[in-house]
Amino acid sequence: MNTSNNLRETYFFLLIILILSTIACDKNNDSDDMNNPSDPASADLTSLPFGGNSPTDILIRNQGDPQPDFLSLWLCGLPADGAGANNASDWTNEDGTWDYTKKPQVEGDVVWDHEFDIILDGNGNRVITGNNLPDHPTGIFPIQQNTEAWQYDKNPNIISEQVIDITLPAIPEIAPEPNCVFFGPAGFSLTGAAIYHGASTLGTDAAAHEMLDRFGGHTDGTERYHYHFPSQDLQDHIHEHTTGHSALMGYMMDGFGIYGPHGEDGEILTSEDLDECHGHTHEVMWDGEMVELYHYHWTYDFPYNIGCFRGTPQ
Ligand SMILES: [Zn+2]
Ligand SMILES: [Zn+2]
Image (cartoon, rainbow, N blue to C red; front, side, top):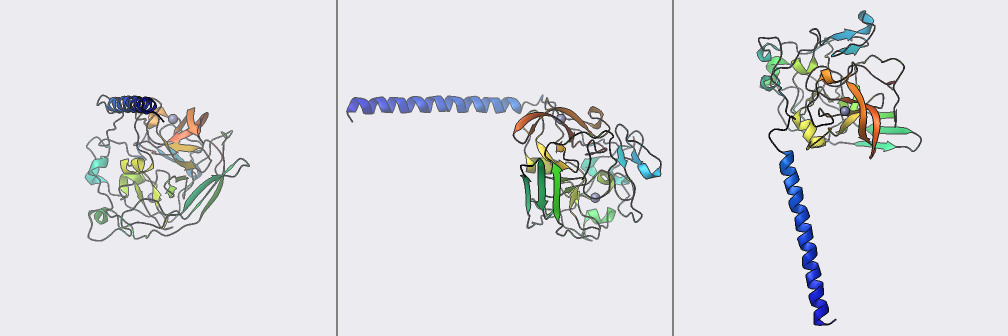
């Protein structure tokens, strides 16, 4: 190789470096724009409606509510042995709303031996298996006696392994009629733990009354860790939001996805933006492609995740 070839190679190399660094600078500029403070993507968590107070109702099919309603949760029934916390007065505002920022949390960072797998079986099914232990630390359960949370919620339950083995349609379909929501898992988060609907077994707003950890989760008499609220830590743990529609956060038991609280333009959605099942239809990322598909959203206001099943639950 002669000197002029070497020189040409060196120039070529420098040119590539120059192009690459120009691209990198452009990327930095883009992300500066995304962090613009005029971004509408911020939520007021200090004034949230209580579920169970009209119009954010908790409807119960076997107690005379035959259909779902906008802004509401439509349960199939209530368990006979309801238990839980029911005093929210210290974070209730004068106007009857509640303030998430004033509500205590279950402290702690307990790490779990997480197992979770989601596969497409090639026959039209999505198969979800795991042990329901999340891939993030949780608060300490049972709630410890010397903590602030214990003053409000004496949840005595531990977190234990559970068997997850469910088969969902890979591309779910809307059912002729919506279906009511049952107690137990209404879906599964991509963190590997259950998503529960927004009511406690007492038939009150679980997120507003029960003591949750910083991921919006806690445990119950079944010893199953589960979420009631889309806390920032839970969202960021799954996928930090930058711009546009939220990323997928889990699958509900009818196979439809549940996404974070941001809509198509990156705006924070509320239940008013969604139908009575707490979802809507537009193009979303689904198994690596943009597909026009019904989906649910987590929102900061009741019913938080699902209002009814738009599809047929497993
Ligand atoms: Zn719960
Ligand atoms: Zn959406």
